[in-house]
Length: 315
Length: 177
Image (cartoon, rainbow over all chains, first blue to last red; front, side, top):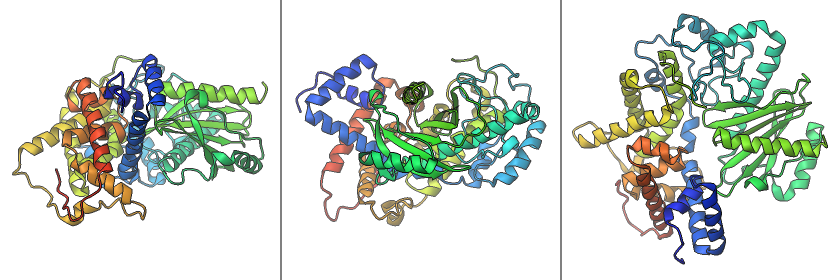
């Protein structure tokens, strides 16, 4: 390998998204010209993927009871939501538990929670169960973290129409996050129909969703379409498009076409475990963009996706 | 958009810990390679987290804090060889139970190669590649400067690449490093 004009660490930092943008261009240019450096990068990308495949599944397993107990406050009487427990018992346990556990340390309504919102729970823990889905009901607008369970339930009682849409959205986002977590780890068959058959993919999905559904182009942000699949949504079929970038980080766009509430929403953000989701409603379409990246980066992508979709519809 | 941290209630910390649990468990399994030992480590980590809860300011990400507790526990354990350990038998070491897929030959090679890496290289690589931590977060977990994270990581990847490119010698018995 020709001696690169920068240290190995920079190559790694570039791969891990830790290199400042101006330096990125230099490294990218070098990689274009040095096949051995590019081969090293490729090997590292493949290692990352392999490591996730090798060990990733553990995070999706049901948690052993003894670990859940150990995560609880010493002396607690089992009031927190139990991951993996049936949704029914969560619904009945949660509201009672919350009133018993009111603490003066809980921030007041209107004050934002710190960045480390307690609602970073793994996919599957808090199933959207209608009005009882404490914490999922009010994600708040982009930039405003969600409210606490007690407050959400109280708010919910006052807004039943909004609640219906809110809980439908909560289910939608949860499904998008789970679909992301389920399909993105697959090395061999991450999608049903690959990007080289995009025309067929678009035809098929549009027919099934009964609406024109076309994947946006994210090349400018470094993401390429891998392909797509059809999935069951809460009330009808949904489309999932999957993208990847140079370091094999994957992004999915989950699209439904049966929104009946006719209330457009602004961008909202949710986090389920490792999966970040930006979502919004636009007429009859619901969109959820999911990735295992930070909120700021995902926000940029969400804006680009939204922009593309706007453009296409000629608004 | 950081806010001054309100003191954490036990309920809030509980939610945070439950949220981190799948990821902590995943990391422990990747490090320990054996289920019971991994879960034991997670359980001890959580116990210690509660012991230390009062001293944690609540600002910053809970994950690096929690992972650093696990990291320090492992260091302590390594210093005390008299602690009961799970017996290592070839069956447990050869194919971890999560690898029962037909096309896992390449993954098995990766697994073997990872075990050959020095443990501090393996840790950094797992924190970045498996746990998607930032360099800063990994540095916090390992209690070292970011520069160390970067150099260990690049060496880990280069060494792993070399190990994977090398043809396995027939009859070579795998040893846990």
